[in-house]
Amino acid sequence: MPQVNVNINQISAEKFWKSGKQIPSKVQVSTNVNIVEVERESEDILSVPFVISISYNPSIAQITLKGEARVGGEKSELEAIYEGYENKESPPPRLIQQITNNSLAEATMLSRTLNIPPPIPLPTPQAKKKEGKEEERPSYVG
Image (cartoon, rainbow, N blue to C red; front, side, top):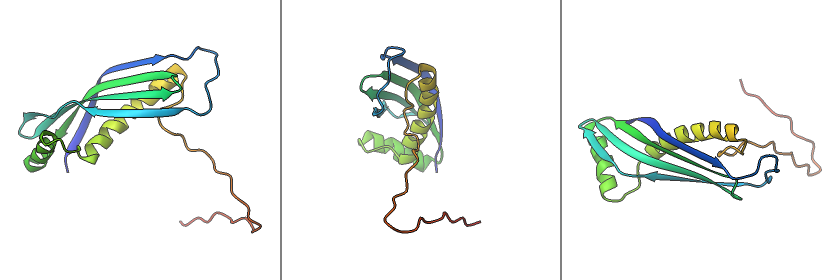
């Protein structure tokens, strides 16, 4: 399994919403991950530059992160990733997941600084539905 290290080289964030103006409760966040290219750095390392764009609807803010993922591993695994890129195939899910996870962590910190909703959905408590039945107690298995 290849090892992926993500480095963020540039961060750009802008808040469009006026300070003091109430942000709507229903905000849609779109995240676009763009792999710029896959380059062979050596026999056992690939360089994968990327750009992540995060936009809000309504237009509250825009966050852009640019960086590079360095992928190391066995020659056969790296060759498969490189050839997949050359053949316009989707990148391996693990690569996209690592890039997205690291970038969203940075974007979440930026969203706090800008006082905008985080780019990841936060868990919301769900009210239990009552259908005339006795409410179930939570069970815990230790």
